Image 1: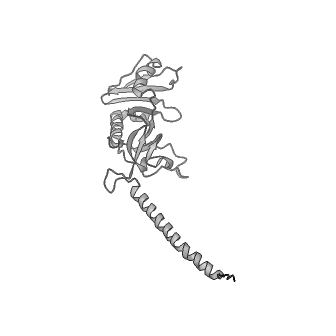
Image 2: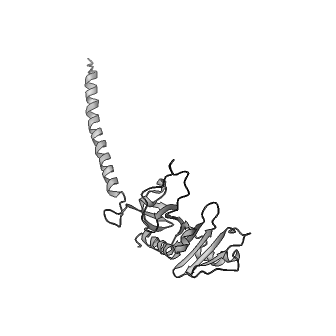
Image 3: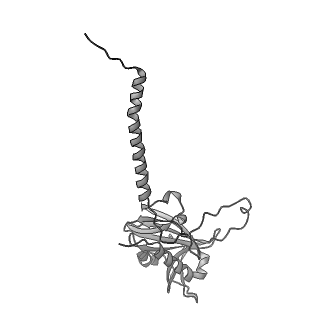
Length: 235
């Protein structure tokens, strides 16, 4: 005689719920553990005090930099780890990281152009390209006029020849403190200067208004300070 055992639908649902409870609890505990590990490992590197802006360790061209988050201009670049390039700006002459961008409003759109109060910096991996020093020594001389102007403050200016790729620019240089800057001339928009330097696997490109050359020693000192301040610990 064959005996059939029947289980009610209600009992089956109870049994399923009984099995699901341990699985759900295990999932909750696993998610909590992952969140805790992620929190503990999240990079929080700051060299200043409690009031200092948060900084990120960023590797560019294999060179470690310690960068204030609020100075990084693009949100997509605000993460730690290796990056190909990063763009920053700092208030001048304080060299503090700005609190935010300057916005044009309906009240100010018709007023005269406001003076630039920031020094801009791009850090990029150079991939063994020609160094800024080599470019100044071997490339620029082929395009420069023979004449040079040396003002009383020690800053030498040589214009580029008109028919060259740098025809609308001038090259400024000084030795104490050291400064080399390629500057566009004032036209419809104010002239801007570009000054480069190499730090291990990365090239630092500073940009600032040409009008700042009237205080060029302060500008050269600011670029030196930023170069030192932004370097991360060296192994």
